[in-house]
Length: 478
Image (cartoon, rainbow, N blue to C red; front, side, top):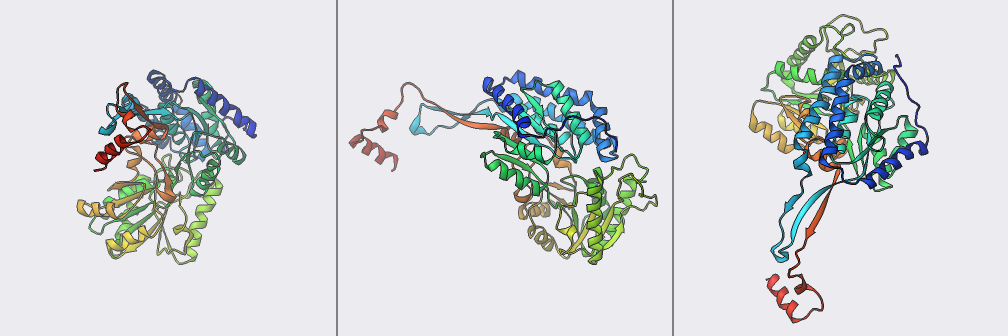
């Protein structure tokens, strides 16, 4: 794998603490940046994304061994530019203090909520979308008026080095800074007394981040993952469902936190679903090994992990079916993995216990919609749920009877790029949200403010207490 550029690895507590202290001092000097200043910060982010898009494409592809240039621009660059436009159009309204009702007893006081920057926000970003998932939470934190320290993934060193270079060049070091490195740096990073931490990654590491943050009572937003199911109603077209599921599963070779993890289909539709999925995959990717559109697995460790999941399932009785009818070979250093279906899976198999994060798609059969919903509800709450059905009443029933971070009906992945919707998990799939207005509010403190007038009746409730207060309380409690 070619190394495009490198930066010195931050490896000590002191080297992480220094930029944090600088950002904290800058926040104290200017605790409430103006609307105009925040807009300049956001515009800088959009401009550097557009200016460096080819470098972003090259860095991400180098990290993966191969990543489709179109996928990188669609999933890394375009959403950031659109996100800045969305935040720009809403920021003035979000910053405006909100009037709240005042209890008649305390009139003529006036109540309001002011959205105050938290201070210094730490962002820990993952490897699967190493640019977009670093700068999207950065955008919301800056919009809220915070200073930001970013720790990108060490598994994508080229993209991390690029982020280090372009963000440090674009922003003053008392606004945004970047530290790079592995587990030692991550440990020192999470031990800092941030005012908020946004972490995107695995549930296992999320627990470690939350444990470290607890020592400083630092609030956290955890964007995790889990096993996001697709439920296809027996009355729904197998070919229509397959087209959307294949797209969601094979985009970035399945290395997406909200990728369909497994599919629930009626037992009578299994064969039709398998055939439809194979046809849909062939239309998306007529070739695999030679295709510029099909992305490689990020590294050998994750490729070996995926191979192990398939081998374990087959050894325990699952049937492996090629999801791609092409005969082109995947052997060699490309790092690509041909997509496969697994049928006859059971809970004893590792593939049904772990988040897959790759082009492996188990199919589980059900006899009734009730049985399918019970299957989902018996398992940890997922980050996403996908339901395919043209009957809106049944779709509403599924929404009522299940819990997940987000839902798409007759689609996959799409809820993530709806900027006005909150995005986040629930339970094992995460906590908090950082899209939409909720993203702004996550990075602020909603500060309650009471403004009392010079002439008011509060002296009537003050000590010394006596008959006057007794009569007043009797009236108030009547």
